[in-house]
Amino acid sequence: MKKFKFTISGKPYEVEVQNIEGNIATVNVNGTDYQVEMEEQAAPVIAPVARPAAKPAATSSAPAAPKPAAATGGAGYKMAAPLPGTIMQIFVKQGDAVKKGDKLLMYEAMKMENNLLAEADGTITAINCRQGDNVLQGDTLIVIG
Image (cartoon, rainbow, N blue to C red):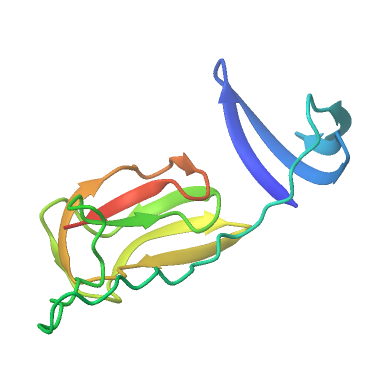
């Protein structure tokens, strides 16, 4: 299922969650299988569904100004980790100008090397990871302003 790498008190652990039935998980830690009882039954992972916003009633005959495609509340476009993994290499630095499709970083997930590509044009305003970092799915890695 999912693999994780942890370092606890300087000792590395490779953990693979193999199966979850109810509140019992079968995990492999550094080559040894364990049955782990969880406090609560694991909820199924459901991907969010984008729904169109309700259209407001027209009060004016003037057309509305178009909204920017990558608006995120003025904080920039947040590039999130699509899968849990390890950052292998970062190809940009803060202040670099990027175009949609540019390679930002390479990460290892599920024993494969993957590239994170820019989803918008702009300037790198923040890099929230370093080479070697383990990241979880949904973690904001890079912000494009």
